[in-house]
Image (tube, rainbow, N blue to C red; front, side, top):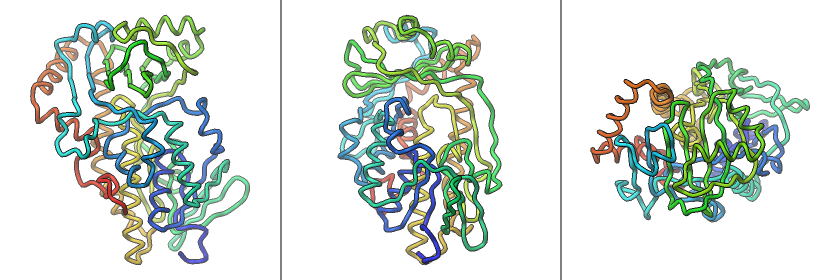
Length: 417
């Protein structure tokens, strides 16, 4: 790295995708700097981010290759089965399965290594804590709280101006700071998308009965309702509601919320007792028109914000982190300018098709399943039934959801850079 630069790569956004990229670069001998408006200590609090994510098994390989397995595994709940049901009431559907349903089982995954599950359920706070500790141990500089005011990109360098007046320079800047990315805007990269006029309601509950590592996804008229298994027989609930109903649920008294929860949840896992606060997140689709440009690359929600209907949003970001890290590291080892358009186009080309097809697929799923149209209910039910009866089709969906389809970066194969 030339002495005129403050870092090899400046990463705006120290969330899960940005932090994973920073750690991967540091492990390969590069110098990243991460910038985030939230203090690291605040990001680790249970009240900061109540979400949990289904982490694809290929994405977990990346963390294992980066040395995070020991810190993450005590908090990682294996997903052994996924049951997808189209119904009006989740409890009734679970007790007496609808004729149209899908079942995915980890035993059917072809080519998995070391008995890998379908994926892992991870609470974001534990993932953030493991990444923060690893970054600190690796000596990676994390500026937090610090906020990016602007960025400039020229033929030889990129510069990032912080709100406190500091200016940092590097050959490459990565925008990983979410849907309102300042880096994306500064680079002149537009974004396309629309609002679903829905809100995701997220809560953690303790279950009266063991969940057995089974994840449930119910497609209800108002939107999907997911029961995602966590460690210690808890579950993360993610259900989609209209904006007005979600706001009412968030502000409801505990006994009122519990009554609504049990009505949706059903009785097949016994009583579900709320643990911690209720979170709400607006749902929309936003796709950047480009994934990269001269001296800039986009990652995570800054590049693609999708509906959580199949839990693929974060996994898209982690796949992007693995691909971008490999492109940068390989270019640096070859003596190339890591911020050049030619280098960054390799990353964009690698991720473009997968990003667009998955984003379009998630949008189609939302429109197909978030309604009570009787004709669409029959069509989607028949489709689910057909896929459920065709082993190769079912196994392909599992491989796709596990992030193991296509030209995988080395980290997603569990290999070091």
